[in-house]
Length: 166
Image (cartoon, rainbow, N blue to C red; front, side):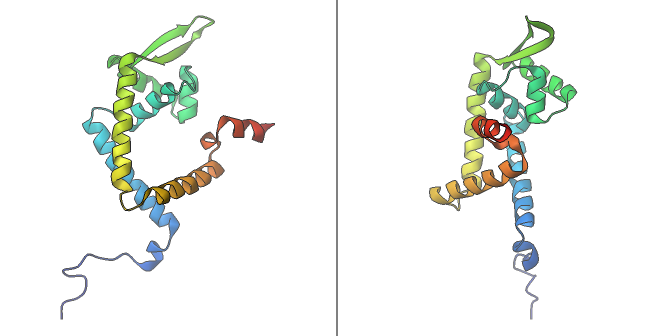
């Protein structure tokens, strides 16, 4: 008799399959791997996408604030901004009211690149979440957002943050 492990895929222990921590960790690792791979193939990175998305919403333009919101080391951010500027995706300027500060803005090319990256990320999401119908995707998103907001206030809407402080 052939042992079950030969000729059939190995199964994970039920203890791991029933653990949300294990499942989220494995799924997070896999989607991150795919996103990194595909973004790099497109000549970009998750960091570039994050900076462009933040600038695209107009949430903040001060270089230091970008680092704080994205939880990046400021020297790391400088390197990322250098790369984005070299590609013509952003423009940095000294703040006229405070010469020590730099403001960052998207260029037209940066908005186009953000559109391409958004489409790429949507395709990755659609592929990864293919087993789920739209209602299940929305439910999953809502639950993940609820957990994320519990652990990190940056996932809250500005009105929610103001209410929590006030």
